Length: 271
Image (cartoon, rainbow, N blue to C red):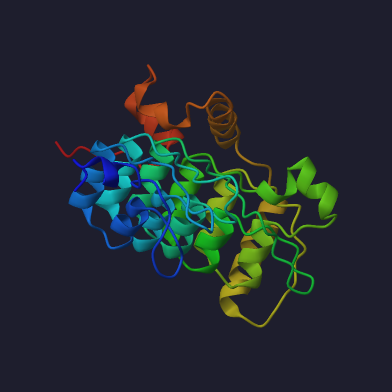
C-alpha cells in the first residue's frame, strides 16, 4: 500500500476510533513491530503526536512494548516525549515499574527528573509527582534505585526555584516515603544518594515499618556523613552536571572505585 502515492500522503495523518492518532500510533499501541518498521522506512514521523499530544514512544512505553520502544529510540524519537503532553515516557515507566524500558529511556538521554505538567494538589500534600515519587509509592524498588543511579535529584521538588515560587512548602521525597510507609530500604537509598535529612517534617505514627524508617532518619541527623560518602556524592554530582553520570565505567580508575561510585559491592574473588 505504501508504494502507492495516495497512501504515502496520509502516512502521518491522524484518524481512527477513540484517541485519534497516526498509523504509527496504531502500530505501537498493539506492539506490531514489523508494521512499525515498515512505517518508519516509508517516512512516518517518529515524533508525531495524537490528539492528546502523546508520541508513539509514549504509547509504546504505556503498552510495555520494549522492542517498539528500542526501535523508536534508535530511529531518533525524543526520549522525553512531547513537551505539550502532561506526562512523559519516564514518568509512565516509573509508575508501571518497567525497569528495562526505564533503563533504555535513560540510556538514550531522557530527563531523569521529568515532571508532570500538572501538579498534585490533594489537600495539603504539595508534591510534584516526579519519577522518584511514583516509583516509591507504587513500590518499584528497582526503578527507584535505577533513577537514583542515573542522577535523579533526591530533593528534586525542593531545589527547583520555579516550583518553589508556586509551592512554598513542598513535601520532600523522603517525607512522602515516610507517609506512604515505603520502608527502610527506600529511606536508606535516599540518604546514600545525598537527600537532605533535615528537610522532611517527621510525623510519628503507629506503623512499625515507618517507625524503623524514622529511627534511621533521626540517626542520620545525629551523625555526620562519612568523608568517603561525601566524596562519592561530590564526584557523582559533577558527573551529572556534565551529563556523564552514565559513563562511570569509562573512567580511568581502579574497578573497586568504579563500583563504589555506582553503589555496587566489590566482587570477592575466591582463590
